[in-house]
Amino acid sequence: MQIYKVGGAVRDRLLGKPVTDIDWVVVGATTEEMLAKGFRPVGADFPVFLHPKSGEEYALARTERKSGRGYGGFTFHASTEVTLEEDLIRRDLTINAMAEDDQQNLTDPYHGQRDLEARLLRHVSPAFAEDPLRVLRVARFAARYAGLGFTVAPETLELMRQLSESGELEALTAERSWKEISRALMEDQPQVFIEVLRECGALKVLMPEVDALFGVPQPEAHHPEIDTGVHTLSVLEQAAQHKQSLTVRWACLLHDLGKGLTPEEEWPRHIAHEHKGLKLIKAVNERFKAPKDCQELALLVGEYHTHGHRALELKPSTLLELLQSFDIYRRPQRFEEFIAACEMDARGRKGLEQRSYPQADYLRGAANAARTVAVQPLLEKGFKGPELGEAIKRERLKVLKTYKEKA
Ligand code: CTP
Image (cartoon, rainbow, N blue to C red; front, side):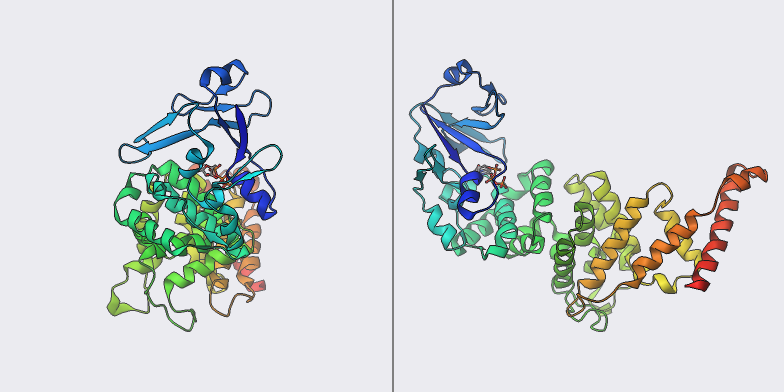
């Protein structure tokens, strides 16, 4: 049997990037030979094994053919006859379809190295269309390597467009899609992921609520970039530049969905978009089964981001309601993430990227002030049950009034 390093490990070594995961392909071996060498089979579906010591993935060279919709509809063929070239041709991108032996001799039948130099994400063959998840993968690689100057080859974009129009994307499971989306959002330029999806028509299928924001104007006084879609991309860009968490980035992407629902005659104003957007945020959250912390923060940021911006003008009672909604006493981290998302929203505007955001410290200060109210003295005064709750609120309100006067 011959063993080759394949995929991302070869690509990233040639790019001079750190290699974390190594995938291997084994040519000329049978399942029985692999088991005899102590490899552990990964699952019943594919001829993939884990190395007994390193735990790295070793796959028998295989060909694949699509036999139905979605990812389940696959038949594959692995035998000692399948060549390295046959295995590589079923892969997604030329830059992912190179193999290397233990002497670092490169096998590159589809010119991955040439495309690395040309900074092109190009599909290997029409077999690309056999897995619709690749539309998201290409957009994710575009987001990751945009800084190096990579773009999607026009013919690949065309194929992605056809796949998006064919209805195949609807067959993707929430889990597979979320894995790509969440990884893409954590790349250096997550806005490129959304841009590429939009360009090939996949955004309209996957997140029509985000797609609908493009072409929707906002008041120029607050939004020099005017377009709500452009604004959303800038907010995401800011979130990446400030190294925000996945939860914050997800909330940034969804915070203004309500603006896509404003009737044209009301443009460029978007009265109550925060509240109107909640059902859309909920729908996107559920479509991809986003983790609970992402879902929660996206809804809270959607509902309260304008409160964040107006923090210094809020009445103490409104400020208290805001703090209560976030349960800042038990969930301090979540409130910090809200503040971060608001700040990214404020900076994700043309020419305002460097502005200061005094609201952040003001909100933190208010939360700290509210937290100083101690429960014990109120218990000692005999308050209990709902009355205790009211008494705590009254005390917190007092503290917030003083806080606002002094600020
Ligand atoms: N692959 C593919 N189509 C997919 C998934 C994977 O063709 N839908 C192939 C590609 O050749 C890819 C390899 O399998 O390089 C390994 O896949 P994976 O580990 O998911 O990606 P990497 O390319 O290693 O990239 P990453 O750095 O994102 O892990």
